[in-house]
Image 1 (tube, rainbow, N blue to C red):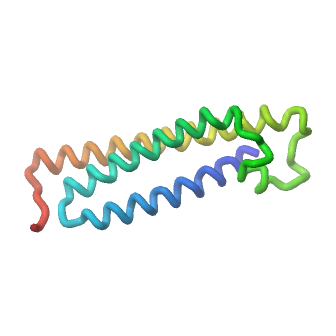
Image 2: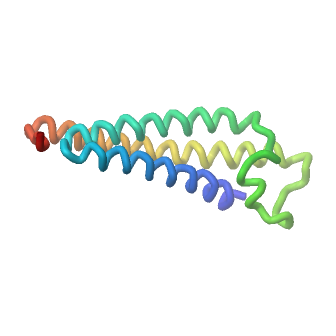
Length: 123
């Protein structure tokens, strides 16, 4: 179940990071702004993941992508399914929120370094 949850959340985060990367490429004329926009959008992604982790406790387990990915042989009995699914999904969301928070911090540090170094993009 953990593997399916991480696959589901990881795939969603991958698409989100692709969108963030596209915005950053659009800002490539100014390296400081590039990393600032990446830091802001990645921080937004972190906040969304934290909200999703909170919602995982109440979301119907049958409506999760993880449940659909999971082979029928590996699904838990219905009386435990809600609790197990919510717990595993919450863990996956929080784990990816930690990863995206670290990426956001790295981008903000790079933006700060670029600003302090006076690196200015082309006009």
